[in-house]
Image (tube, rainbow, N blue to C red; front, top):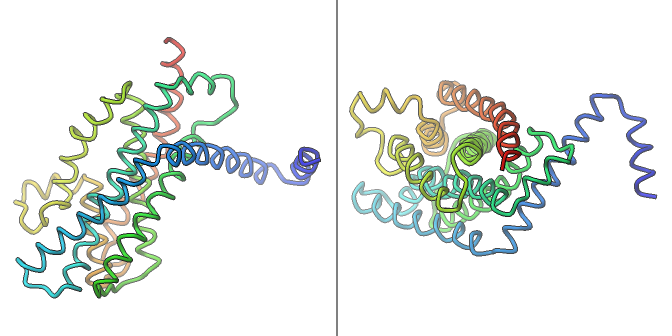
Length: 277
């Protein structure tokens, strides 16, 4: 009966609505499978919850002592680099690489050859799964910061937009690296170290960008982590709006669009490569 009702519903939709419904169902199915596997393992979820909390506390203690800030100001200032450089980076970039590698090792990709799953749906499904994880980390970090009297300014909707673009950017980079360069579990760790750590350093996650020489700032302008960190700091701490972070926002919008397109392309390429094994 459910199948009959579903097909009757399809017949009453126009072509655009049918396409959106199909992509939505495929995306949710992929996300549900990824989240189910993560919940079954549990260990990754626990570490992804503990790690940003520890980094937030350490960063706050350093800022409180060295920058002579109040405890609330220190925690507020530590939130953007903690989210960008610890929480979302390792769960979304490292997690998406690990997801693709797991698909390869468990031969799940072989099943995709005979399925009608689209590349965009597969990428968006991985994005949706890690978006759920990222939301949990964001709530955890903000809750802990608020507990220590951190005060934030700026537009709440703008913060949500920036965090969403950050998650999509990380998942996109991780998806590309995972499909192209990672074939085993140990490859995932090597990729995160080789590509991720320099991105974090140049993005101001470990050191404030005010200490960077002009040569590094010129390179950092092409680093999405730099734009994530600077935009979040400007909105959350200084209360800036869209006009003030316009360049950062445009870069992240373009970068996110590019990784979605790249996700479709590299998904198709990955399937062609896997057919030869």
